[in-house]
Image (tube, rainbow, N blue to C red; front, side):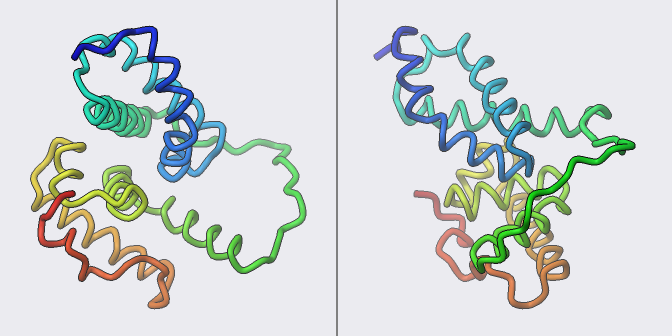
Length: 177
């Protein structure tokens, strides 16, 4: 069944929060996350009538989000420039959940774009190796290697008490859901 462009706004309204959360994990910045999600959704509007199923729409938009993120990271304008007057930071909330979140987000920011995308898709989006490979357009071996390298770097940055799942899940066997 072909999708009607009229239901695109319903899809966007329903998926917007999830897309922005995923984009935030990729970019580490709320403003960039919203821009990334909006850019990806704008690109998907053209293909919307050709998408046949809801699952295809979700996968298509996620792929557009990842491709746009990787493309943005390749541009030299992506990197922040120092300013003479840095913004003031509000008082830090020291609750344990926020502190842990901050540590994880900072550690994620140290990863190269492809490794960061793999970690977000595997552990946040809870996709299997095959699904991640399909989303990123690479082999399952590449996903496994990127995951290994990313987790190795995260362990180095965060220490051995890293709050990321261990490598013994069924996803590591290449299973997808």
